[in-house]
Image (cartoon, rainbow, N blue to C red; front, top):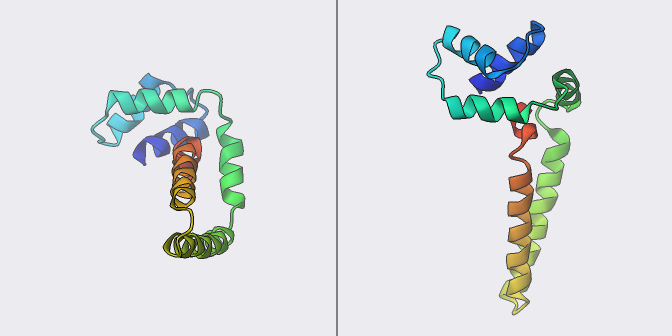
Length: 116
């Protein structure tokens, strides 16, 4: 998380977010810097408007009330799928649903995870 905070500090101060500047902020904070993480973050933020991303993140209600409702519905759907599989339903279909969940999680590993 400190890597993201360092990038936010650089953005707020009007400095370019590059490997040298990011490493400098992290060093100043006493963080044991991993060069590969610095490179990955700089590459991920290359075409991102950080101010816009922060505004969008701030627009989401605290606690994720909307997401909580969706999670409750998702749990009910999963229970129904499990019951179908137990009733002799298509087990491959239930397994396919799990794969979709993994794809959703994998797509969330990008920039959204940095700010969310």
